[in-house]
Image (tube, helix red, strand yellow):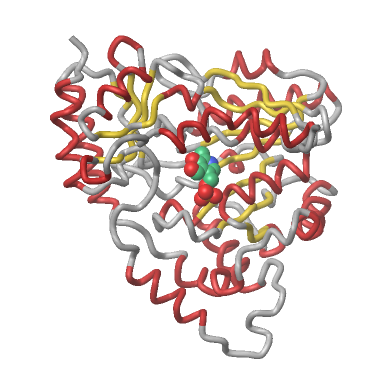
Length: 391
Ligand code: PLP
């Protein structure tokens, strides 16, 4: 007897590989034999003390309505509108901001605002493994479009070729998980020009969802341009979980580009709160919202992260691995020896070292290392990488 709805079944199918990996990747390995788990972007050290203090302070009620039902609170939206305005050069107002449980909550909100059943959404290949599942849960259609081979830059021709009458949305993830590539302003302007032309042809706008949770995690002073700066029909999603390395604190936002033509900007602004309520009260907990004023200026030690990137990237390239040097994010992406990521991950696991095989990103030839492991873990992992290096 069938229990699940067709919708739940099809979205579950899309994430099955990831769930199987989650539940099995350390199967049969004793914790004491694990030298370095570099699989997920999770913390391996105690959280930032300033962050903990800021949140604890907001747990202390200051008014009877402190823990009343909260939608998007005015104060964090004002703080965010100002900060995002400074980062992008765009005149954001607090009403352009919806507070969400992380970037994931903002992505789900954007999908529910923009996509009808059967609408198509273009997503990058390789790309984060939850887009397709979240789209299928809304009966929307994920259309994977490969990034440029080797450089992983946006490839405008294939995106244009994938646009159909049902295309409503293009997800642009910059800095990009898993490759760490940051798209240039010129390339984004090229995408914008193509989407404007296609939107005019279709007689309705194709939106961009700019997935920017790693926006502040950049190396070597790399510049960043949000697609919103060049394309007004853009929504931005952001998460504090990355820069604070605390993904279990579900805090983020969806921002509507303030240069979006009317009536679209107002329509979207007004639809956020109702859609979040209908989705099951999808707002961050009140104390997290109160803490945004303090959290906005905090972040992990970027010098330390850069040292980890340089150590790992330097060692692996020296041993013959083909690696993409990330300009942002806390990931390192490369080609597995013999193009067999699953076999490579198994070899490393035999040495107590864990990485994410590219199968989870629909690129079975490649693998991802998370640099959120400690420096000691990274050092401890290197002999295993050397032993498994390409011949
Ligand atoms: N987008 C990308 C590209 C990600 O890598 C992630 C998390 O790994 C998210 C969105 C979701 O971020 P959060 O869990 O902080 O909401």
